[in-house]
Length: 418
Image (tube, rainbow, N blue to C red; front, side, top):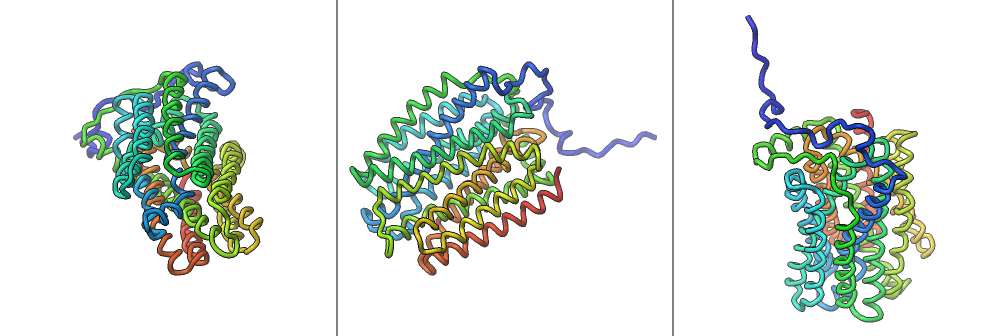
């Protein structure tokens, strides 16, 4: 007598084509081709604008504290609410892009975020500013997850790590530019002028992105039915490696944002007394991330993803400990190492997610970035209480705990996955 095999989650899914079906070599975008240049310039520009908008408030947190009579933890909400709502939005925009397409979601999201930033610059109530910052983060969720998915679908698999590194280098330069522009302009003019300028730049970037990004070749629409989304969600969390990658994103981003949220408070105080413009100029340390992220992606081909991610996390920890020193040049050196390690680790982890996900890659990338930005929101605010309780040593202890947990997750990931 024949026995019927038990039903599985995959059996309950509607018959849809996978997000990246096997294709002839000519269908992939190859390094060195005109399409590769257009794609990388477009995504570099989108990443630059996205992270300039997201992090432009970070160097001016002390100014916002003074102008609105806020504590450091309260002032940090202008960043935490943006990253928190961005994290929640990722749960929607990733699956939405699986249904309607990658490019329309990204273009619309970047344009909306630019408009919200322009509105925030005109607000005079702290709660209204927080509302606009939250909407900015919500809109930017449509760029962050979908860009990673587009790369994993359209770029030749052998080039994905390199292309992801280039995209993340755009993120790092964007984060640097947003901090640099807002920090310097706030000192010579005011923070409203800085945010207005960044909002106009993001609108121009959205238009450029729409013109340059090639059309998708491998995209296949998937169902938006809640039952299908739930099944895919369960499959992602049952994977041997994806939950560990999600945890790694939470811990690394939480550590990174906490350091940069409060380093300005430290350096504007005794004995350094740096100006707001000088603190903004310290954002040039982000250039180390632009250097390290594509190199980390290339290094994975020789050493493997696990070893490279562990090494990058260890570099973050060493840079953090150096910032405990008193000389300013040592503090800046520690910040450079910390930044280089972070972007290298993030480049490896984010590229790994797209390669591990068997189905619904947009949703898998969204879950990784949900954890990533949730770490930014939660740890960035908790760090304010650590600063209040223990100053910079308290911040260092908190970040060290996050990085040790990230090393543990990376070690387990290396043992469990290829």
